Image (cartoon, rainbow, N blue to C red; front, side, top):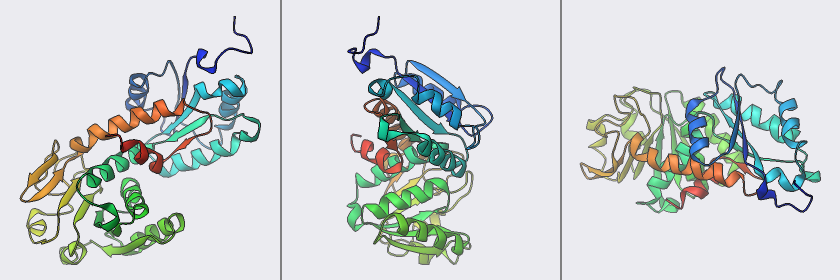
Length: 297
């Protein structure tokens, strides 16, 4: 029989998966199980309008002392929807009375992927002195890579086919990272490429699947490029000449990482973040927290 003096760790771990897609992600469910979660409750089609009652069910069923054994994971393919859901979840918690659970946001794997990519770059470059170009920088992963690099002190060019979208991303990151060194650059045509790449020692491709963002011929013209990271897992490569399994491979004098090469660290970070949720009931795990965990790998 459970008594008031029982340890919080006597309670089984419960992860509540809120997915904004109609069917909860099998990928995220498998990772949860592999991370040691004992009970997994999965809900699809989640919106800000239907999540409050479920959050109440999470926080009012265990004592505040035991709520560290309950956590929420927010996923789905739409990052903006996930962020909106996370905002409502956090506003529904009542931390001042201990009625709170830890929350992880990783819609579309954007946070764990970005953390793994920046960790790969940090193995070879001093990020505080890094000159980076993010291709596909207005997408969910690209924005987070830019934010993490800017927070580390890097000089970051955010590339997009629509420069005004890149400028909006730069403004949003500056609001979160005061003093961030960010520049919006156009990458719509072949004539934009040399200027965008000029002087960069890191390039990260985080654009749409199956789109070549950096042709090999253009990459070969760079005198400064040291590390190239392609996060596109669907051929053709976003950075031509990089292979999916590359993990620190030398490609024509440039250290290369492909999607699978980054993916090993991404998976380790994902599992570590799930485990981290159950160490207290007050955490919110976003891109920065994922990157902190990535330092172990």
